[in-house]
Image 1 (cartoon, one colour):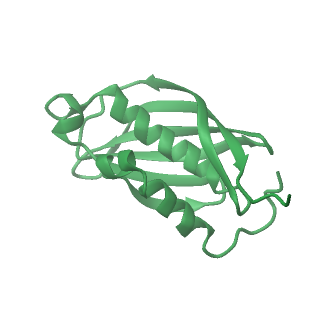
Image 2: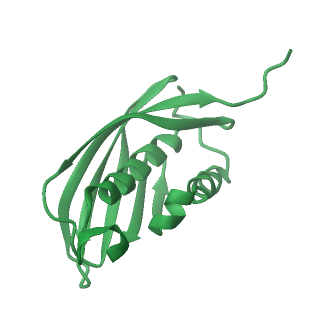
Length: 151
């Protein structure tokens, strides 16, 4: 996979729109805060609907934002007409996910044509803006060429 070619001007906006069109992303309230080649930052509010007790998120919500951040970071390196999908991920929770919001920073570890290894660190963010690392994810995304083929 050639990652040295600059993406088209609308590549990041199209990627964000595709992610935010997913019902799960909308349900979680995901917001992109940063996107660059090989990296993304997403945020989501800490909501009682995703908590196992008030103010502390359940693991599924933590996994979801980490996965979205890591795999969207991988998507920033894809050529036009390609998409990707998670095929494997491992989450390690290292502290409670409490606070006002979660912030996940996704990054590419290794990109190739078929598979991209990606990662994310998830931070619990207090109402004053203080970050505490609460989880880390290592994942693999399958890169899929969706460009029409000539018959």
